[in-house]
Image (cartoon, rainbow, N blue to C red):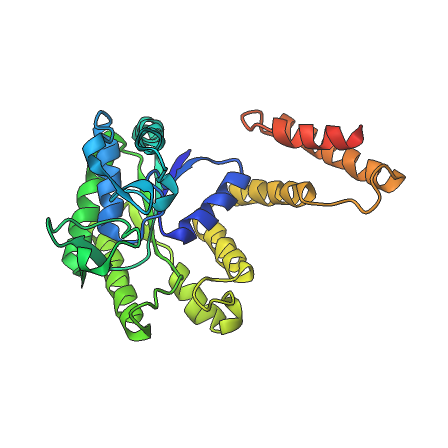
Length: 309
């Protein structure tokens, strides 16, 4: 299966865990995006395949060249470098999307910035002066319309497509707690409407798991905005229960043990105990390679062979 994940920074956390599970996937082709309209616009542009970004779509701010469709991670001091960063990702992801049969969309906020001079909704405000933008909240109908239009186009070329929608548990508190709750409620209702409209779209309750299952600020980081590692792990485990077959979950759990072994820092390198540990991991890798020949374990094997000496 081929997966594509788009959305808020929570998408990056789930994506990293899927990558550790050796899934074939792409994450955030244009970088982190928070609002559903920008996410849908990204998908539609990838579907066109032959419309890379052009010079006139870039602007300079703070010594870096940027795009209204991209996260700041694509920005660069040189115009050509920024454009190259954007278009290398564009071509790779546009080639990947037509064969994608699983898409995960994580909506972060229904509150959007749009340019005063054109009315265009931006994916990122790049910390531009406030008078560059107007702000408003997307309606449920706008979210459903933009998302449905993009997904239907993908489905037309990929009949096996399945989509998972989720609302990010990351809190957007710049406008206050009440505005955050209203924004999240708008997203949740839009997701409900999309699930009713399409039998191949389902909802995963990441936001609700953090608020209703965990229900404690100790499951947030010190900034009181982002979920802690413990909370992310809890949501990830529920995600596996919901979206994975039992056999897939078992594979991922075995790979997670290997990932933890990779992070192990030996107290006494070269000792008998450490050599035994390294050999056990190499044996584990050999068994995984035998059972799952399609998965690539060269990186993990090299790591432990170097430790063996």
